[in-house]
Length: 216
Image (cartoon, one colour):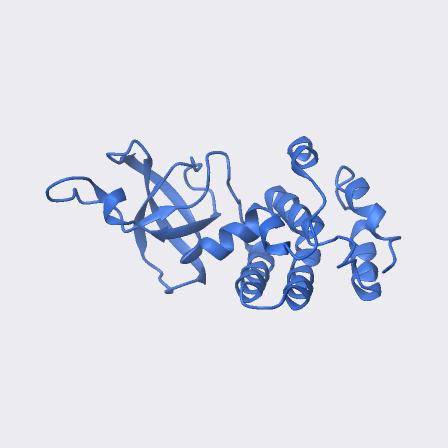
């Protein structure tokens, strides 16, 4: 996973922060519903995608529900494992073609194959903060959007889930460039996280260069 992160990193262009954010913030901004739940496979849709029944534990975005419901997904989810689902409504074209559409789940996952977000209960708060910041950032000027995202992403670097730490690093790095360097307060918060003994040794070299940067 770290090698993949190194392969896709590139400097973010000034004025184009939203186009440079990583996959987590992008997923949040495209989702109509985000929830934490446990999936069980139920078969295949006509499209060939997998169908799952998801038992909802926590709703992070959209209509709250404690019931189980069905989704279709290109990504594969490990049965029974608590994880985050990023969902959009199923359109008529996804539901079937020609004549009367075949009955299909109302929701489909926006996650690509291999894109999974395990969620231990202690990580719920970090996911919730990222969801709230990413949704708010879509309607804010870049400087305020970046500040809000960083405030949520820096704590997420300490999450138990590796995928959350990985994508929080990707998204945080995407917000840092010449016109929007880290503020002194952000550098201090980030340094506390990065220099903690338990922090990922492989992620530390990616973030340490920004701790010494100063606004130009």
